[in-house]
Image (cartoon, rainbow, N blue to C red):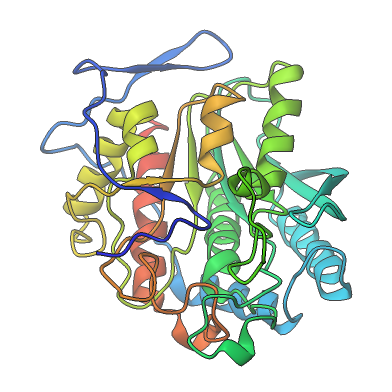
Length: 341
């Protein structure tokens, strides 16, 4: 198994976390919920996640082109995402700033936050990044290494699942709130072809979520827990239980994987552990202090542990599997409506 030391940095090995059999996540109201996952979970009535709808949202994002921060496609797609969340009853706000890239050049950052049931104090957080990588630096053809990535899976898929969740939920309502966060400047870390990576190469990944987490912590934002979605539509995707997710939110991991198995998605959510991934859930855990997991693929590909299209010009809608989108989306719908009981 090859672990790339690059973005979504994997540290080989697993550790046993120190969580007890029952972990409680506190909401901002002081309310607590037991997230221990038994072998069989009573399933509340829940709507159907429409994978074809999520697929259409992926295609729509990709039709703008590569959403590299600062380009026209990025601006236009961001405007489209804002409009869609507003159509689905969300209160949308933006956090704009300028960050510094690996080459010490300024990077415009536009984090988007869409709040369902904004007046509810009790909240959960669901996130994904929406930017496209500026370089297909893991492409098997070196001539493509400076070509921007269309990012159907590594970007658009997570946003599409969130949009479909928002569409479904606004039709039925919840007794708590959900914050959907679209992180920008996640995927602009040091290219593999850069001559000097330096000792701080990992610093330049997940810049948007780091900035958001700092601001969220500063204003005292709280959510009961968070779920980050990354590359949740690729063909043949298998979502192992990622290391930092187990470290910070073991029982939430267990609950989601048990729900997926009961819903018939054990092929996509096997009870397997993976290594530690530097992704947007990490600053949510470490900076914002909100227990957050990462749903991200792990496989034994010789080109990437994240699948054959990762950071290549082949990360296009034709490589997306609607069944994988449904496995992720329906599992989250079940979690959300179980929590509404």
